[in-house]
Length: 291
Ligand code: PMP
Image 1 (tube, rainbow, N blue to C red):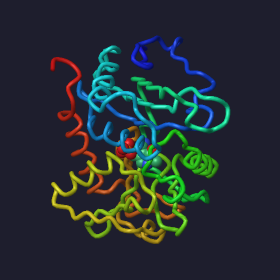
Image 2 (image 1 turned 120 degrees about the horizontal axis):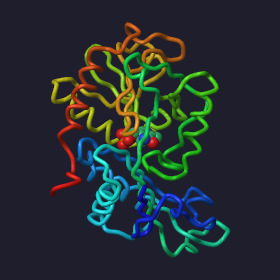
Image 3 (image 1 turned 90 degrees about the vertical axis):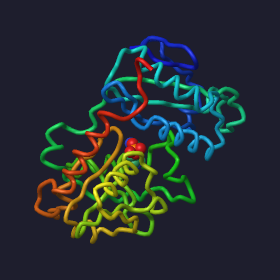
């Protein structure tokens, strides 16, 4: 595997960062997860846009331009000869002194890893998933805004541990007001009487790229989309539910906190959106080869 590290490709064994990198010491940095399908990078521009927005929010100067970052991502996939893969793009604050002052970090570090990822067991996609709400509340947007895709994922990891302890794969996180925000690494949708609902970003949801794509596809299918605050009651009484993310793609949800959702099987509109999503990933995106 060839890994992009600060402008050079190196082997997995040589891809090392300093113990003084503030990405490691403090989770001070930002990242993206991107997928390539069928020789094309899906929604590359949108992911690089979000990387730059996250970096701007934490006053981190990415040492590459937007165009250079797009190129470095495609080059890394090409160097590994992949047509279908998952790319992890990381920008850390860089090496600094002990002590959290970011001014001691003179050179942010850029890392790009192209590999494979399987977030959930394959059989769950056909059967649908059980999820639970957990006690850990999603970060306040006035504290660490969940719109920032930062390296500091402890909020999400705590929720994931609570889900695992409850014997399920994923958690629904509520915000401090008790409204649904999102899952630990996925956005959440419900369908009620033919309308697709998802929590608004101010409820503590990431501006998910898959979320945006699904909303677009729903509109193309003539389905009304609504971004409104949702409570646990709304989830329990949904006709259908699914979660979305680049890594997870679209996963139907069939049980929440012990309540069966709809018929207890992936719902018809969920399946339609999943089909439309996969059809789109096959044909759209930035070509990796033969430009
Ligand atoms: N929420 C969180 C907290 C995430 O980390 C992610 C990305 N895995 C998502 C939602 C989904 O975003 P996207 O569709 O852009 O991958």
